[in-house]
Structures are given as C-alpha cells and as structure tokens.
Length: 118
Image (cartoon, rainbow, N blue to C red):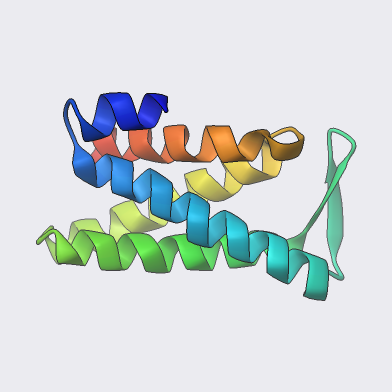
C-alpha cells in the first residue's frame, strides 16, 4: 500500500511497476522452483532457502526489469547495469526476509532502488 501511495500516485510509476512485477514474477518463481528443484539449500535465520530458488528469483527479476526498462526507453547501458544491480538487491532482500515478510519488503526495496538509480 505504501508503494502504491508514494510511487504510483506521487512520483514514479516505473518504480511502482518494478516493485510489483519483481514481487509477482521473481518471488513467485523463486517459490515454485525452490520447492520443486531446490536441492542445494542454505539456512538464514532458521529459514531454509534454496540456491535454485534464489537463482530463479535473480533471473526472473532481471528479465522483468530488463523488459520494463527497455519499454520505458531507458538507455541500454542503464537497462543492463541497473537491472542487474536491482535484481541482486531483490534477491538478497528475498533471502534475508523473515518468513512471508518478503511480500512486503521486496516491492518497497525494489521501488526505492529503482527510484534512486533512475
């Protein structure tokens, strides 16, 4: 709700879209791939995460941001670099978020990172 109020209505709809799409695609695919193919696991704060799920989060976030930034006519070097940086930030946020708090933290962190970088 905070992301919608600030970024969509106030300043930057692109940041709102980035946060929402990374949550939908990145976190969704991370959960699906992690549960089905997650063989290499790691433990953070008592929560099990899988390397495969984290890779799915990174790759799908990068694909979403790459396409979104291209759609908005951002220069190609920024599409590639900022998409990479924000995808890493989103993946780390998903990895360290406690339980289901990632549904709250990912859109906010991605929207803020997008707003600051672009």
